[in-house]
View (tube, rainbow, N blue to C red):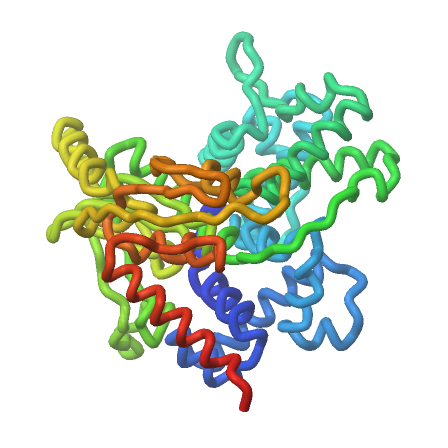
Length: 436
């Protein structure tokens, strides 16, 4: 995953998708908390990423960045946002050096000193030459992410590309594997690492002269680009959870007027930010598939806290905590969200709803959906026309969209206040459709 933070580009792309490019340069810059000049540099950088992905863009689409996003909306081959991860994952000098290392190890297993000599003789003259420590650091990173492996044997150790899986499978088996990875990366979460595996398999198949149509059999529509964008922080947080470490970040709530703040190194240009500096212990990560949102549940000075992942910027790991204390806080969180439909920690209430069976329909898709998505709720009564579903939840806010999505097939029975609330909402909707 990415070694550098790219909060600015992520926030910009999220705004671009949500507004369809309706903001002016000045409005974008104000919302991001940066200058128009910095905004223009960001645009140029992202256009470079786009041009590396889509070589056949029309001149108009190349000029208008928002058109490029629309162009890739149905593009299941190479999602634009994935390439943001790749383009921002390493610095330019690292990119050149790592490319040379991988190309050399693809042909044969080499030692550190052999790789150092190769890099020094092959790198462009305008880039700094690496030392042995740098090469060892690169090899350690590549080995950690599974790209290369160290061969067994005496010192000095030799390193080669980790491609045993690909070399052991036939083209037919690779196509089956590619189709599986393609479906999983586009329909499951997290997705970015699946896309990276998919891209590597695709390139290998095309090098083996497999027809293009054979590796692009599916078409997908992305409802929530943000689920890809927010994975920039996902693996950092998962690492912190595994190692019981606190994290620090600058947080922008959904109600904040800004979604990013530039990190100024010159004291003369420091500015006030609307973000809030947070230090907290990550305990759990939750994904809301209905709205495509990631949430972080953690423990801070004020107890259990909830953060929307898209508001987190400048994230860094901090000190580790005692294992016993960590387990105490995790148990505390588990108790609080025991009856949460998603992440609500409010007062538990019992919700009863009547679901009406579809007329003359087999199978009963209403009941099947309730049984599939109803979590720990139970059907407590049933006749030939309907059934009553009952569940204890922390408040009604989070379960409301799910119940409302059944339309006229669902009637809220209890609590009475929730029933009145739903009646008022449906009356409001009805008023929108009254004749003028």
